[in-house]
Image (cartoon, rainbow, N blue to C red; front, side):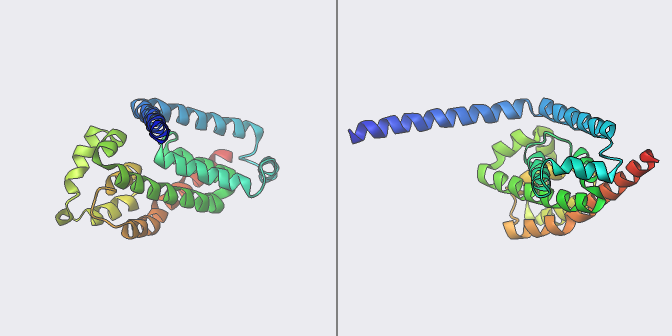
Length: 217
């Protein structure tokens, strides 16, 4: 009986593993389409909110957020930002736009910062757990071949990473995955993200806030 149970259990595990792998492969093959759909949905939401007036009136925004709860709404947004780093379904810049539009420049910056930092660390840990083949699928061959040559500590990958994370136009999310197979420790990577990320997020947040204020006027 025990042998039969073990056989059944191993078969069930194999089936679950196969389904998990199939879902993973599907995400990799369709990541560009998913990103485009996510971007279109984000733009649609911005247009929807603009027509409702929730992005141009503090009173209307407060009432709209009140339906979701003063705590629930920020937590949901932070979760979305975490997901968009790990699975790029929404372009990062649009995520920042949503944060600013929904919560204002200060709170929007804080929620963007928390979500993006958490997502970046998760991406790093996934890269470390699943290795080069997984990372190549996530980032694509072109990116992987371009940046993986800097992984050797002699090339100063940690310094390059800090500079690129600091800049607002670098492919941050993909670099987080690639960092997982570098010699950088989790502690050092987390420090780079926490210290370097605020600048790029601040530029996005304040720059987009200025643009939105100009459009409102």
